[in-house]
Image 1 (cartoon, rainbow, N blue to C red):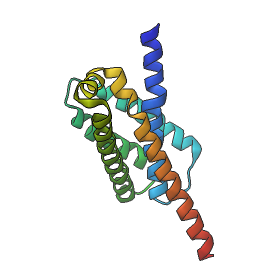
Image 2 (cartoon, one colour):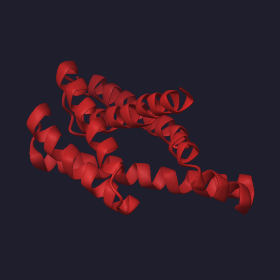
Image 3 (spheres, rainbow, N blue to C red):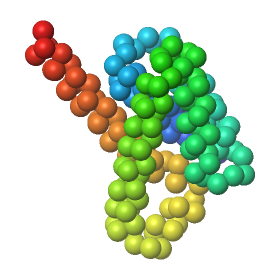
Image 4 (cartoon, one colour):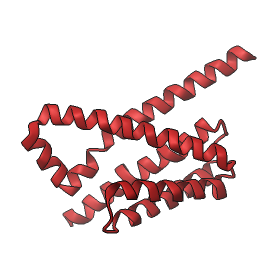
Length: 157
Protein backbone atom coordinates (compact mmCIF):
# COMPACT_ATOMS: atom_id res chain seq x y z
CA UNK A 1 0.00 0.00 0.00
CA UNK A 2 2.85 2.40 0.80
CA UNK A 3 4.48 1.76 -2.57
CA UNK A 4 1.16 2.50 -4.28
CA UNK A 5 0.81 5.80 -2.39
CA UNK A 6 4.40 6.69 -3.27
CA UNK A 7 3.66 6.11 -6.96
CA UNK A 8 0.47 8.18 -6.81
CA UNK A 9 2.31 11.04 -5.08
CA UNK A 10 5.08 10.87 -7.70
CA UNK A 11 2.51 10.93 -10.49
CA UNK A 12 0.73 13.99 -9.10
CA UNK A 13 3.49 16.03 -7.52
CA UNK A 14 6.31 15.24 -9.93
CA UNK A 15 5.10 14.08 -13.34
CA UNK A 16 1.77 15.88 -13.64
CA UNK A 17 3.01 19.07 -11.98
CA UNK A 18 6.07 19.23 -14.23
CA UNK A 19 4.00 18.42 -17.32
CA UNK A 20 1.64 21.27 -16.45
CA UNK A 21 4.63 23.58 -16.03
CA UNK A 22 6.03 22.59 -19.41
CA UNK A 23 2.69 23.03 -21.18
CA UNK A 24 1.98 26.28 -19.32
CA UNK A 25 5.47 27.51 -20.16
CA UNK A 26 4.93 26.71 -23.83
CA UNK A 27 1.67 28.66 -23.82
CA UNK A 28 3.20 31.58 -21.93
CA UNK A 29 6.44 31.87 -23.89
CA UNK A 30 4.55 31.41 -27.17
CA UNK A 31 2.22 34.24 -26.07
CA UNK A 32 -0.87 32.13 -26.65
CA UNK A 33 -4.01 32.14 -24.55
CA UNK A 34 -4.51 28.90 -22.62
CA UNK A 35 -7.27 26.63 -23.85
CA UNK A 36 -7.86 24.55 -20.75
CA UNK A 37 -9.19 21.35 -22.34
CA UNK A 38 -6.20 21.21 -24.68
CA UNK A 39 -3.88 22.18 -21.80
CA UNK A 40 -4.96 19.28 -19.57
CA UNK A 41 -5.06 16.79 -22.45
CA UNK A 42 -1.53 17.72 -23.52
CA UNK A 43 -0.23 17.76 -19.92
CA UNK A 44 -1.84 14.38 -19.16
CA UNK A 45 -0.46 12.71 -22.29
CA UNK A 46 2.95 14.27 -21.64
CA UNK A 47 2.87 12.96 -18.07
CA UNK A 48 2.03 9.43 -19.20
CA UNK A 49 4.69 9.54 -21.93
CA UNK A 50 7.36 10.88 -19.54
CA UNK A 51 6.55 8.27 -16.91
CA UNK A 52 6.63 5.49 -19.53
CA UNK A 53 9.93 6.70 -21.01
CA UNK A 54 11.52 6.81 -17.55
CA UNK A 55 10.69 3.13 -17.08
CA UNK A 56 13.06 2.16 -19.92
CA UNK A 57 16.59 1.14 -18.93
CA UNK A 58 18.31 4.06 -20.68
CA UNK A 59 20.42 6.93 -19.38
CA UNK A 60 18.54 9.71 -17.62
CA UNK A 61 19.56 12.44 -20.11
CA UNK A 62 18.09 10.37 -22.93
CA UNK A 63 14.78 10.33 -21.03
CA UNK A 64 14.76 14.13 -21.03
CA UNK A 65 15.41 14.39 -24.76
CA UNK A 66 12.77 11.78 -25.65
CA UNK A 67 10.22 13.39 -23.33
CA UNK A 68 10.89 16.80 -24.83
CA UNK A 69 10.52 15.49 -28.39
CA UNK A 70 7.18 13.91 -27.50
CA UNK A 71 6.04 17.07 -25.71
CA UNK A 72 6.94 19.18 -28.74
CA UNK A 73 4.93 16.85 -30.97
CA UNK A 74 1.96 16.87 -28.57
CA UNK A 75 2.06 20.66 -28.28
CA UNK A 76 2.08 21.13 -32.05
CA UNK A 77 -0.76 18.67 -32.60
CA UNK A 78 -2.95 19.29 -29.53
CA UNK A 79 -2.24 22.92 -28.61
CA UNK A 80 -2.16 24.01 -32.27
CA UNK A 81 0.88 26.24 -31.75
CA UNK A 82 3.41 26.73 -34.56
CA UNK A 83 6.35 24.32 -34.46
CA UNK A 84 9.04 27.00 -34.30
CA UNK A 85 7.37 28.64 -31.31
CA UNK A 86 6.84 25.30 -29.53
CA UNK A 87 10.45 24.22 -30.02
CA UNK A 88 11.78 27.57 -28.76
CA UNK A 89 9.43 27.55 -25.75
CA UNK A 90 10.14 23.92 -24.85
CA UNK A 91 13.89 24.54 -25.03
CA UNK A 92 13.61 27.63 -22.82
CA UNK A 93 11.59 25.73 -20.21
CA UNK A 94 13.92 22.72 -20.36
CA UNK A 95 17.08 24.81 -20.02
CA UNK A 96 15.44 26.74 -17.15
CA UNK A 97 14.69 23.47 -15.35
CA UNK A 98 18.22 22.16 -15.94
CA UNK A 99 19.78 25.37 -14.57
CA UNK A 100 17.44 25.40 -11.56
CA UNK A 101 18.15 21.70 -10.89
CA UNK A 102 21.88 22.35 -11.10
CA UNK A 103 21.68 25.11 -8.49
CA UNK A 104 19.37 23.03 -6.33
CA UNK A 105 21.61 19.95 -6.45
CA UNK A 106 24.63 22.09 -5.58
CA UNK A 107 22.69 23.53 -2.64
CA UNK A 108 21.63 20.03 -1.53
CA UNK A 109 25.16 18.68 -1.79
CA UNK A 110 26.45 21.59 0.27
CA UNK A 111 23.70 21.28 2.89
CA UNK A 112 23.63 17.47 3.18
CA UNK A 113 27.30 16.69 2.65
CA UNK A 114 28.58 13.97 0.35
CA UNK A 115 27.14 11.01 2.29
CA UNK A 116 23.68 12.55 2.74
CA UNK A 117 23.59 13.67 -0.88
CA UNK A 118 24.60 10.19 -2.10
CA UNK A 119 21.84 8.64 0.05
CA UNK A 120 19.30 11.02 -1.51
CA UNK A 121 20.42 10.33 -5.08
CA UNK A 122 20.49 6.54 -4.54
CA UNK A 123 16.90 6.48 -3.22
CA UNK A 124 14.69 6.60 -6.34
CA UNK A 125 11.61 7.93 -4.52
CA UNK A 126 13.51 10.66 -2.66
CA UNK A 127 15.33 11.62 -5.85
CA UNK A 128 12.02 12.06 -7.69
CA UNK A 129 10.39 13.98 -4.84
CA UNK A 130 13.42 16.24 -4.44
CA UNK A 131 12.49 17.79 -7.79
CA UNK A 132 9.38 19.41 -6.31
CA UNK A 133 11.21 22.53 -5.03
CA UNK A 134 12.68 23.07 -8.51
CA UNK A 135 9.19 22.83 -9.98
CA UNK A 136 7.92 25.38 -7.44
CA UNK A 137 10.71 27.82 -8.34
CA UNK A 138 9.92 27.35 -12.05
CA UNK A 139 6.25 28.00 -11.27
CA UNK A 140 7.23 31.27 -9.59
CA UNK A 141 9.41 32.26 -12.55
CA UNK A 142 6.59 31.57 -15.01
CA UNK A 143 4.14 33.44 -12.78
CA UNK A 144 6.42 36.50 -12.66
CA UNK A 145 6.80 36.33 -16.45
CA UNK A 146 3.02 36.25 -16.72
CA UNK A 147 2.69 39.29 -14.41
CA UNK A 148 5.39 41.14 -16.34
CA UNK A 149 3.67 40.50 -19.66
CA UNK A 150 0.30 41.46 -18.23
CA UNK A 151 1.69 44.73 -16.86
CA UNK A 152 3.45 45.47 -20.14
CA UNK A 153 0.28 44.89 -22.14
CA UNK A 154 -1.61 47.35 -19.90
CA UNK A 155 1.07 50.01 -20.33
CA UNK A 156 1.00 49.51 -24.10
CA UNK A 157 -2.76 50.15 -24.32
